[in-house]
Length: 200
Image 1 (cartoon, rainbow, N blue to C red):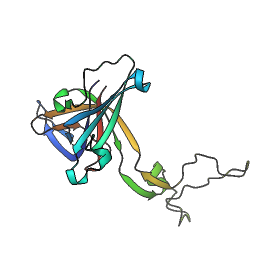
Image 2 (cartoon, rainbow, N blue to C red; image 1 turned 90 degrees about the vertical axis):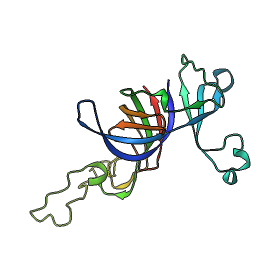
Image 3 (tube, helix red, strand yellow; image 1 turned 45 degrees about the vertical axis):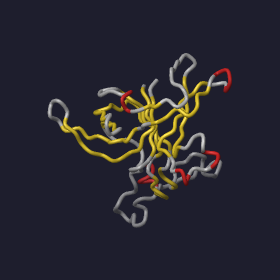
Image 4 (cartoon, rainbow, N blue to C red; image 1 turned 180 degrees about the vertical axis):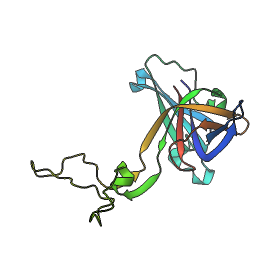
């Protein structure tokens, strides 16, 4: 299992070997460092904790002296997974190769309070025959019995800022010198958002 933390830089495009334009998301991935290894015997589960982006000395609190990183995330291992990583080991983009399929998780863009058309992709009401003020409303939401709104009904509300995982993304290019990954297609979140990247 391969994994790394990265920061979304934005979208761009590259050309493949056939000369076709490929839209890509550029991610600054790593270098990351192993901060802790959890074992089945000691912690009842197996995982590896890694840190990304060093904190400045003046911003490092006393409790963070042993792990002076802005971002720390944990990647869980299966019972049969084996790793040779040790505390302090460095992880960089060289572990990935062009054409490899990966999974990326991140927090999506926050959209604030939105109506049902934008939030749930409702069609909306007709624009004629006396429907003046109901173009983007949800319509009837109640019932005759038990005379209340059912739980889980799709309604207006806060949109975005949720954890999103996208599978089967393909690595379009790897730049080891600049710690960059080019991923075919879009990934969750705005520019600067932290992303968790791991192999399938």
